[in-house]
Length: 624
Image 1 (tube, rainbow, N blue to C red):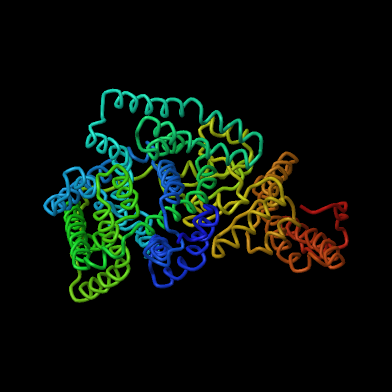
Image 2: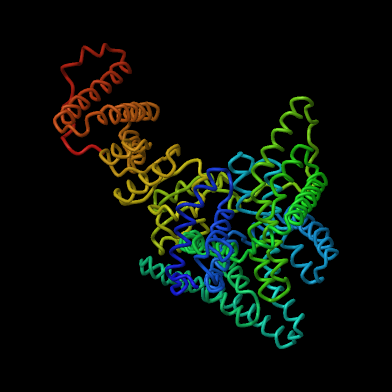
């Protein structure tokens, strides 16, 4: 008897997503396991071989494949032509060697096992891929992204992301060859679709996004982002190619645009939900009875995968002249299977390059390798520490695939500048002149266009949104500089950054003293926007009136020190109006005495002689 839930797709989607997000994912992460395994486990539990909540997962799988399309779009946004050109040696050298040698060895074993050459080719390439999400997360948690093996791992993962795109594109063609349906007409349609997405995207996408951004309607921008992704995917699908290829090309076309981070923040929630649903649907399709009958076959497949990939990665690292310990850590980080393998296997199953039984076996092999990954890496790390304690390694040789000094535009940003008006532009120009990588966000599309036209690196987006900060790489930022014009937006951005990144260093533009005190309440260092330039003008006025330059500079230094000390003193009482007025009067009198002391010292007189001849204090007015 069918489950009552099978009659309603919306209820099934709600059920599986809530079960995965609320129960499975936190539980698996508590034990050091990745979210992909949580989704797969949820799918197995809810599927036909589990408690049977969903009897037919095929319709869920069809809807969830949009998550794969959106994942490829986000990957495209990360792969700018400038980044590829800079890292071409480690990416195409080390990355290409790892993928193709691993695929050759694993594919050969699968061919010997009995798969067709097409199935063995696709499965070998799928198993050669590692988990980008897991690999980079492990390196980040261990603070090894900047290490020798961390940089090489990033290059290899980038190549794997790139090679996965044509792999998905050729799977339908290989399926067509099998069914003798491939023709020159199909090839012509494929080439035409590629040209349409590439040139049409270049001509239309940025212009459309610019017009939509000027409307200041977030929901319209979200719809436009979805249209760009799904439209490109639809064009490719009509030509018989993988829809993901169209999404990837669209992402590449927008990787260097000012809307990159805004697009990523808009697509990320849809991608996360639908991709999680895809893995749940894959888990629902796993035949547990078949796996239970073949435990040694699955264990042998996992052993083959880990041994082959670890050996190839170790050899690549040694050819790249990494020391032995770094080579072992590279192998231990990337020898697992990857989440992209599930996508590849599912596509191969769809076009009948893999049988249902072999699909289930390969999926189980990748899942088990991912489950074992944290334990294996911990054991490897402990072994290497013991070995280093017993016998230190010799100094490493110059790496063969060393990544050259990167252009700031292609490096992880160290500074985030929020708001690029007159104030923020000066900060950004100073960082650019020092070749310090930064990312700048501005919510005004006209200002973004003007700064971009003059060569500035700036992206469209509202810095008061948490999803946009994450898309801009805020977790890697060392210093946040909040330069937005509006004091309330300024404070809102600072509050958000302080909540999400409590240890962050935040420097903020302050409109006046009261704004500065509110920023100080948030643990932020304020910089009053007119204070420095006003002091420069004041110094110039003194010099024009005949005051010697060194004396004028000394007066300005004394005034700055006095005023900054006063800002800190008044911060303690700024919410007490009477105490604040009293502090202002006392501060003005103190400043007059300080300057009288300076003048008396310069004239060689005792300051007390002229105490009663002090000039009247300046007229009352709001202090800045």
